Image (cartoon, rainbow, N blue to C red; front, side, top):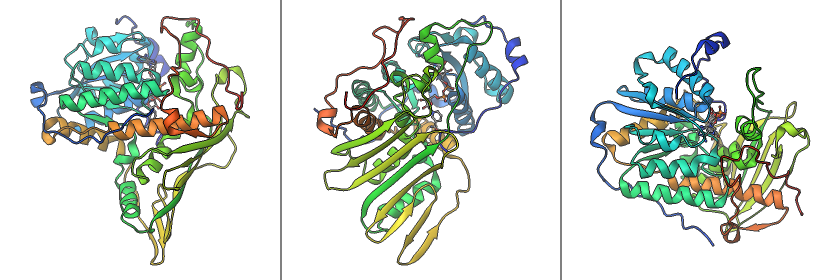
Length: 429
Ligand SMILES: NC(=O)c1ccc[n+]([C@@H]2O[C@H](COP(=O)([O-])OP(=O)(O)OC[C@H]3O[C@@H](n4cnc5c(N)ncnc54)[C@H](O)[C@@H]3O)[C@@H](O)[C@H]2O)c1
């Protein structure tokens, strides 16, 4: 499943403790052509990589880009917390020692560490923090002329998504590449299935059912030597605060919603209604997010998508998408098509999608020309937020009205250590 990427080798706790901590109305989503603009002169040899967000995915993404490009090196690391940097540093120094070239002065910490890392001479920056910070990080990266690998989702509210879209347009005008972490778009077998569906193997798509039904994820508590402020507690457990993660419909189910969007031509739906709530994750430690959502999206031509996500243990689990057509049905992640001609299926020969993203990114920098996934990564994020807000509000929402939202989630200042998150949304209130 996409949210369980290849986990890098974890150093032992003993090794971790031995490591020093001394280092410092509607937005028009245009399609992006790929203009043959110039690239950094500095990338003719070593491709210098920086990471913002030294967690599981960020550390894995560094290893993926180092595997994708034999002349890439990681030269800068940034995270809100030094202990997280040190874990990543240990893993990389163990697993890819010959490609680890991070000087101590290229290690940055703090909630605004993105502002510092982009001042270094990195060519590419990998954005893998909680999505709340993505708009500010995208803006800083593109302003500084860096190519970007941008994990999903890209924002937690409409104004944030619009900022990312603007940054992607600026990247396009500067000839910078932006590759999205919506990884199924880089999976060979899933591309084959979707190509067949879009090529007419099931006739015209009438509706889509898309499911991300899974168990619960981690929860973090302070170590004996740590004292966390209310803000730090939220940052460490960002999944459970909608101002940081967008809620799990955005953070995780976006992978399903993105496949729906892909099948429907990456055009936004016209309306959405939904239901959701929290039944199993009710304690305070689970923040203010729901544990289940069902959302029904409708497009202008009447076609619909029925999307379900749940994070609950001991329940039926399924992560798959089913496109129903006038002449057959296709399982997207199960890679199976049934139509009048019989059943077709294909094997998934490898889990290379995480590396494929970086092969495309690095090849684009090294001469293939810029690629920009901005359009679909913003559209799919907005669709997830649309579903979330429909379920939170209990209303049927119209896209045009939703896109006018000026609600910005989170504290006015990231320095507000005592920030109190919004209460759990109660539909209808
Ligand atoms: N494409 C995929 O399949 C996939 C899989 C997992 C996660 N993700 C995405 O990757 C991102 C990170 O997820 P993760 O699982 O690695 O989480 P994680 O908690 O393991 O890592 C996040 C890191 O970001 C750091 N951080 C928090 N705020 C920061 C800030 N302002 N500046 C710098 N660092 C900050 C945290 O300290 C932490 O080390 C999320 O957007 C998530 O949705 C994508």
